[in-house]
Length: 285
Figure 1 (cartoon, rainbow, N blue to C red):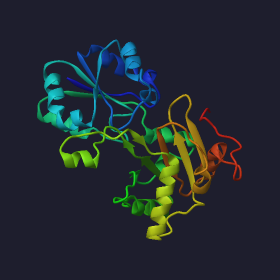
Figure 2 (figure 1 turned 180 degrees about the vertical axis):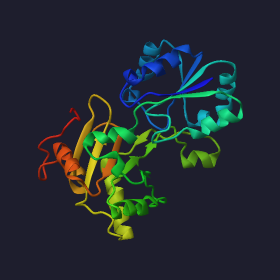
Figure 3 (figure 1 turned 90 degrees about the vertical axis):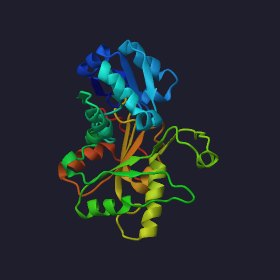
Figure 4 (figure 1 turned 90 degrees about the horizontal axis):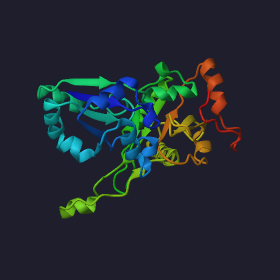
């Protein structure tokens, strides 16, 4: 059997009891390491911390293993219990539907253990989840590639008065273009988009498109390390948030739509006062 287990957003303690039971019964345990990461995953001892809690050796599954060698994992799951650990929820911001489809086609039984995801944890700021529109992803711009397909989605959300969750780019174990041209993969250093970079790119796209979907005075909420003990949540205009150092990854951003009075009251706890940062709330209710 293949167990796909959500780990939540904070640290190794966020796994559910059901998830922990599943891990402990498995003969082989993998953890995906390219769509997201736990807050402690940036440290050198992150994996060992997991292994100590779970009492199991864990294999790091990068993009190549999951996308190109998944059949090996699934073959193991035909013969024994295998756990595939996913930060957040298995079907949250980044789905693992392809792995499930391939498992089903190979006759492998699949069991999913859900957990918290950025898709629902953003509710901590007070913006109601059912008032969100389509979620978008913002990739890193390059000199020759500056995609803006997300712009129309933001514009439509704004016209409908809906909030927009912006997921920011994570580049882990990405081969450089130069190495691909040479036929030998060499990987770029890990990169995690900050809220500041995301806003800079958003404003560049608005200037290019000129559709008045948003501007520097548009209200937003910035989240850093959501779900962790040191999470940071700041509400303010795009201009204001660009001045804030949100610290270490991961970051995400919400562009605020039309707000209900109850939303405004809750959001007020996280707001900047004027142009200076009078108070940042860590999300403690």
